[in-house]
Image (tube, rainbow, N blue to C red; front, side, top):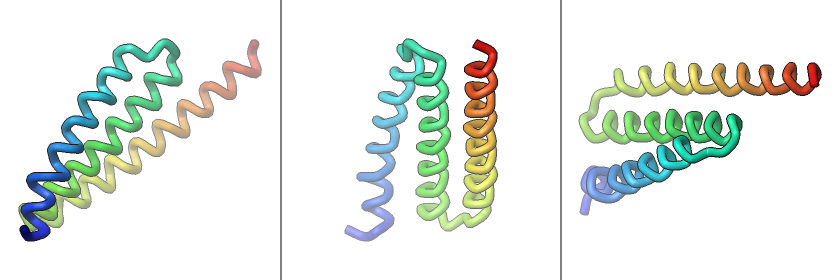
Length: 91
């Protein structure tokens, strides 16, 4: 079994199952912070899928897309933390 087969037959199904579980948490999350963390984890898992696909198809351009998505996810997390901090100060 080569590395490409391992990526395609083991890692991609595990990432797909984890996306389903994270999406359930996103829908059922009782608090806003649970949903935001689940959304951030969905983006991170999606970045992992893009990276595995990039390696499998030998297309390095997809890694640039994954890096841009990682930056957007980071900025979203920082913005949410800033929002929570402001909300706690107002209460």
